[in-house]
Each structure stands twice: as structure tokens, then as C-alpha cells.
Length: 119
Image 1 (cartoon, rainbow, N blue to C red):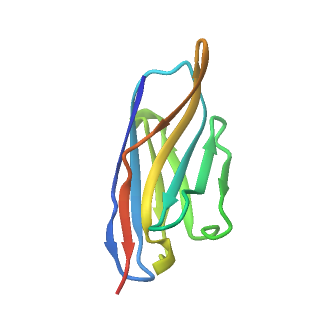
Image 2 (cartoon, helix red, strand yellow; image 1 turned 45 degrees about the horizontal axis):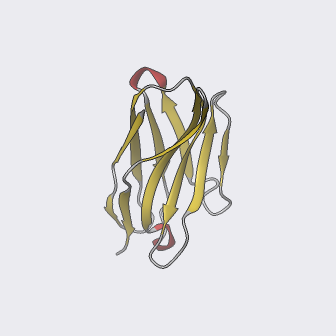
């Protein structure tokens, strides 16, 4: 069983920055990919960024060049550095982990952290 706890959300002005954290605990045999997703009011949850077990990152076009996904293996924590924030980045941000423990794949989610970009 794995637990994910996000933190770092809040209210920020357009053009500002925030860093989200996702602390992981528990155990899993192998991690395939971790991701950040977001869901704005009235919209479907969408992918923001992913990082594979080898460290390869991928970003949604809407955040490419502004957001950075990183990890600290020693702290079992991943981060989403968000720069040049826009009002359309306002959403609840969720951390996701996909991995495998015998005999099946697993998909875990955090509880989410609110990010509001507004003047």
C-alpha cells in the first residue's frame, strides 16, 4: 500500500510561482511512472506532467517551459515547480503513482492541493 500526500498549494498572483510537493510512503515492488494531474471546476482531470522510473519527464503543452517536475529519491518526494502562473492554471492538483506489486498493477492518488492564480 502506498500513500501520497500533496502540499504547497495556495493563492498566487499571475506571473508568480509555487512549488508543490508529493510525499510518498508505504511500499510497492516497482514504480513505473509518477504524475501530476489537475482538475479545474467543471472540467475533467487532465495530465500536467509525468516522470518515469528512469527520470524521463513529459509535460502537457499548456505548461511546457513553465513547470518543472523533479524528484528527491532520498526523501521519497516529488515536486512540481510552477513558474509564470496563469489564471487558467487554477485547479486542484493531484499526485499519482502507477506501479506494480504482485500480482497486479496499482494506481494511487493523493487527496489533492488547491492552486488558485488570481490578482
